[in-house]
Length: 466
Image (tube, rainbow, N blue to C red):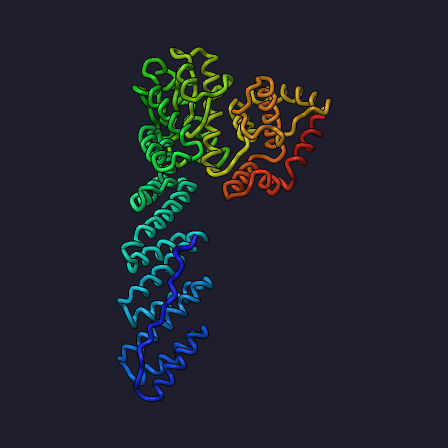
C-alpha cells in the first residue's frame, strides 16, 4: 500500500526582468515544464541561473522543475531517480515544506515497496531516512511502517528458529507501534511456546482490546485462562532440551521418566531426521481431568502438541505397561513438535503428521509387528476396493468424532507413511519437509519430491498390498 499521493507543485513563478536572454530561458523553462518536459525545463532554468547566480526567483523555478520531475518519476515507480531529483530540488530550497513532504513520501513509498519485495534491510534504511524529513504529522504513519518491517524480520527469524532475535524485533515493532496486532500475536505465541502462559495471555488480551475480531483469538484467550487455572502451583523439571511441568507429588515419577524418554528420543530423531530444535520443548503432564479441561480434545486423544506437548496420566507410580504407553505418546508428540519446527508456517495434513509420528513412536521390532497386522487389514480393504486414499482423509483428525473412522484414518496414514519410508527412505521425507518449509503447498511438494502425485502414490501403495 502506497503512502499518501505526492503533492504536485503549484508553481509560483516570480517575475524575472533582467536580460532578455535570461527572460527567454526562463520562459522556455516554463513552457517545457507546462508540457511535462522536465529535463528540458531543468536545463533552461539552470542556464538562466548561471547567468544570474543567486537569483532567488530562478532558484525557485529550478527547484520546482526538479520537484515536478521527481513527482513524475515517483508516480512511474522509479523511486531512486525520483529521490535524486527531489534532493536536487531541496538543496536549492532546503526549508521548503512542499519539497520536504514530497521527499518524505518518495522515501516511504520506496521503503514500502522494498518491504513488499522482501528487502527488509533496505526498507528499514529508507523508512529511517524518511523520519528525518517528515513533518510531525507524518511521523506516526512512518513508525507504523517501520513497526511492520520489524514484524516481518521477526517472522523470518522465527522460521529460522532464531527465537532471541525474533523477540527483539517483535519488541521493537511494539515500541514503534503499540497497536501492531500482528506483533502482539506473534510475541504472545513466542512466549506461549516458551512456557510463559501468563505473559502470552497479557499480549493476547492487549490484542483483543485493539481488534476483538481476530480469528481464533477468543479461543486462545479462553484456553490460556483454563491452563493458568489448571497449572497453578505446578512444578517443573528441566534438562538441556526439555522442560516438564506437572502437579507435584502426583506425577513426580512420571516427570522424571518423561525427561529420560525425551532425551533418548532427541538423540534418536536427531540422528534419523538430521534436525534438532533450537529451543527447549515444553511438556505438561496433567491428570485426565486436567487434560480434558485444558484441551477440550476428543475422548480418544492420548496426547497433544499445540506448541507444547500435553499428555494425561492417572497419577501416582507408573506400572510397566504405563511406562511403555508413556514412551510411545511422548515420542509421538515429539515428532509432531519436530515437524512443526522444521516447517513452522506450513499446513501439514494430519495423515502425514500422524503417520510419521506413529512410524517412530514404537521400537523397531514392535513397529514391524504392528505394520504386518496393519497390512493384513489394509490388504482386505484394497481387495474390496474400499481402501481410502490419504488425500481424501480429513485435513485435521482432531475434528473427527466417530471412533471407527478415527481408527481407520490412523491405520491408513500409518500404513501409507510406513510404505513411503520403506520404499523411498528418510531423505525423501526430509526433502518434502524442506519444500513445504520453503512455501510449497503440501500436495505440490509431494509431487516435486516423489515425482508422483498423491493419487499416483496411492495407486502404487494399493498395488503393493494386493
